[in-house]
Image (cartoon, rainbow, N blue to C red; front, side, top):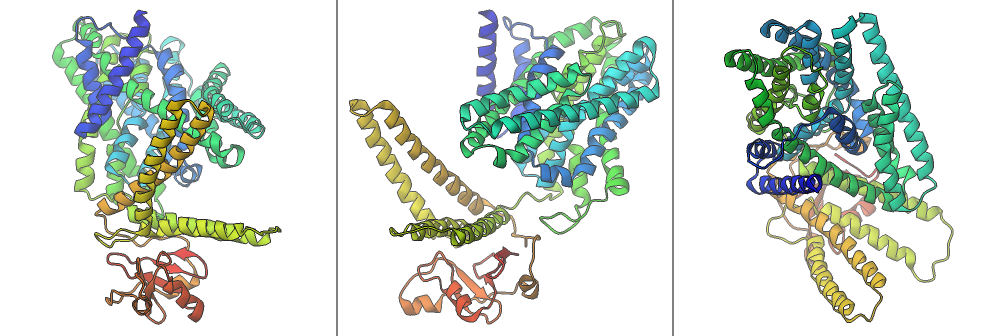
Length: 622
């Protein structure tokens, strides 16, 4: 009962502090560590020791898997050189640098022990970095690299730690280090791929979302255990399995299974990630108590901790700049068309916060190691120090360096274009199908697809204080759903209808309401965005290249709508003849009608603040 009470209290504390962090707009990891440190000194709170087995087997596999299945394999592959240089090269570079620093500043610590603590503090943690990065809106390329680095750097650090500990006994041969790493990486990748093949085979034969999700709960632990038993890297096994399963999910899973798995793993990751930071803080009291019994002076201890903290920050900054300009030399960003500026590299270097793996790995260091309690405090200092120093200053630095956040307008334009192209493929399939349609079903399908596409384009509208048709639809339909739900609940209370039937109807209403809520939220994000719209670089066609953006007419009306006595929603201008007409969300769709009459291929938005163009022939935007 005491353990159960502690776990419940831990969960309640995590949720309470996280909710408070959201309310006061403070990064949750930082507030959780502060709460943990404070709680560790409260009388009656039990002393919590973070055992390595709990973290490396109980927390690390699900956290890695939850991140991996959400990581784009395409983006991971596009940034693989930068990711590998950080997850392998930087870890080794940091281990050697910190190992030399600790050996020089902490008398009595052997080289193997110094390299061990270097391996411990080397891998940054993506949980804190990406949480803060998404919160302040860092470029997606930086977030992708940080996530990819964190998926693999733990494997490098744990192999290096294992090698350093082995060297404390009988020594180590350099070629064995390379062989161990190759075995760990290759074996882990092979086991992860085998897990993917097996689970993919099962999922193609399973339609029950509950069973499918239950299988996904087994995958990270099974992959990790199998790899570790084979003396390979369990981290790499989990990452490979998660990346491949996430990439192939649209093919091997049903839609319901994908939705259920996504929501379940988001919940698990949310709870575990935040629990981790509270656990880190709870280590403070007994760590400081053990250090108090050390024979070293307080000044020497503080100096070693401060030097190590500064060392991990400086070494990362040095590595990212050297690697970027001498090894990576990145190409143009697909969103901007330009090479990433030096500010991106600085932010990438500054986002090197450490996490629970660093603290857990420190406990693997043998008890017989001289000054072990100091080494544990060094690990705690690096974790807490990087989280607070870098975590608190990262938003300020990003603003000072004018690092651009993802533009919601660009996302809305890409979303509308993608839906338009998907609809085109759907219409082509509709034309190929053979069927009889005495009830006009095809017309209904076309109407619903058109309404979906119109709503996506309407989110680009920038006309102030004017309600778009999709906004009006959402407002009216949400009010209707609320009334419908109240009536269903009244019928449920009467007991006249089976509870299963009532649940199904309520679920249908919930699904429709959630879709409307997402669309409304995206629209509000666009309105709140003050970012300058950037012309998207991507797939182009000859028509778009032949028609660059121009200063659109300030007429501000659709003359055809004026003559017809109708009202337009948004205006478009033909880039061949300059004709200004209304968009497809408008009742008469005069811009599309102009294209059909004139075959002029490219139009540009004539709304204030918008310069995107659309090709009617190839269904592409620029």
